[in-house]
Image (cartoon, rainbow, N blue to C red; front, side, top):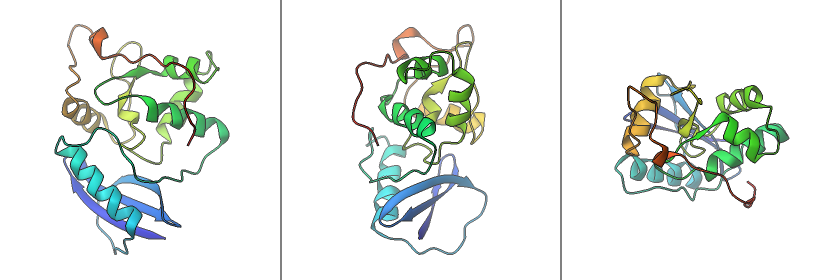
Length: 170
């Protein structure tokens, strides 16, 4: 297993890879011993490009660990484009489980690959919603993507993404 730490505008990210594939990006409050590899190095490079506004999609190979339901949710997260948002209900409908909004929210909260699987782009129907890395980090990421958050209504409709036909899976 390889580990690398990255200082970013949302805090310190711990990048973890196993067998040459990225398996976790987590917010941490301290830096530890590093042993990076090509996956963590590529992830660090792509994340810094994202934070500098030069990257909108990630190419690093990933290997998330989760239940089939979680994997389906995380795949839908990966389909939400830069600068757009979707609701928990949108994702529930997109995976064929329209009444599973709460379960989708739980799966989003357990997302092992922050930013690469852009859970910050998932919002509640009534507003911003939660974020495992904290609301300040969510706001920072959405602002970086130029998603405008209004005080009267959470988001302009022009920022919402609608899922279409199934894409390739993780």
